[in-house]
Image (cartoon, rainbow, N blue to C red; front, side):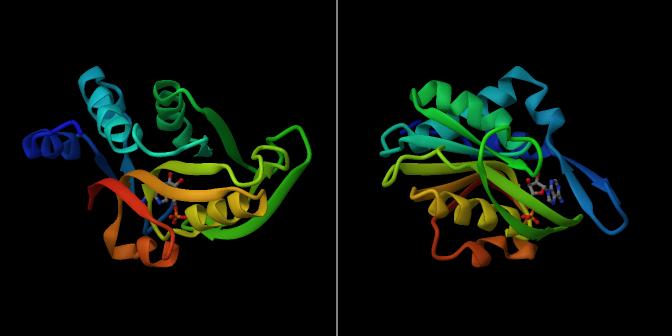
Length: 179
Ligand code: AMP
């Protein structure tokens, strides 16, 4: 287990920028680009994710469209496992399962390729931000629909006031930063 100093976590937290009223009025957007734009912070994020998941039984990592791809790709490479894109409707070319959900921004539909998972595979879901939890829960249900066993959902940042973690219960949930 890699030991990460709490001062490093605090410095990483300061690299997440608040953008009020984006993409619409009333949403306090957590902009992760200052954090991922600096090598030392991107590496810190990935070191924490890798240290948490390297000893776990994971067959595939499911990445949520679109910022989840950034972390899931790097993590799948490090762990030597496959990556599954979970995308907004209309983006995946093959046969899909789809589920509608309500996001902070409005009505959306998430999709997954029907053959993305072999029954019984252990799957980790990765995304950048856990807000209301609707997106992550929809992704979790799609993994189950494909026959996968969801081992955990991992996030860079969690907006605790929105109680997404409660919505995801009993699925295990992990976040590096809490706001
Ligand atoms: P939710 O379904 O409300 O948990 O929203 C999570 C998804 O929307 C993630 O894919 C995030 O990238 C994005 N998202 C929602 N709210 C925010 C926010 N306040 N700041 C940054 N990203 C957000």
